[in-house]
Image (cartoon, rainbow, N blue to C red; front, side, top):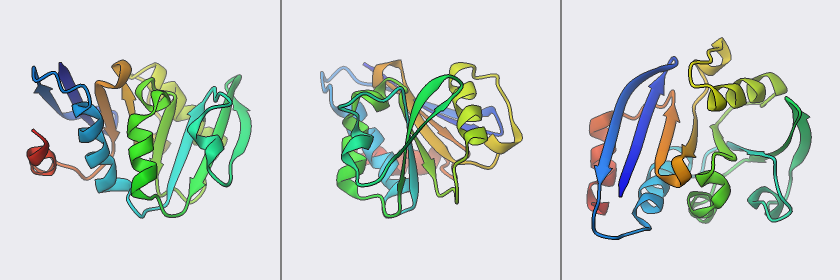
Length: 168
């Protein structure tokens, strides 16, 4: 199993960590990603962006949500004022997060359609660039949950290694 964590700043890869594991621990990626998400989002204002939500989507289980269309896709937005550990665990384990359908946005006062459109464009085309993306911290998974992308976070490679050392 290969787990990747990529840190992107100003649309450039600043570092990448690849973790090789042959222990057969299929939940290792979820535990690592949960630990990283806790580091950034625990007890913080967080926006959850669900693309093409289904009736079983995690966002529908939360108290308040907004639905609208951006780039001809249905979008579900949850503004979470205090992101708890159970929610972070649910996110790390969710199929939507693993399939790039749930994106976490850190502490933005208001997430508008322009920012959502920019994030969706970046996710589908990594070379996409927009000034609104250079100052917004967000996270999402790819590769069926084996790769975590962190945009514009303050995490360093050494900080990551310290953060996840007891999981490896």
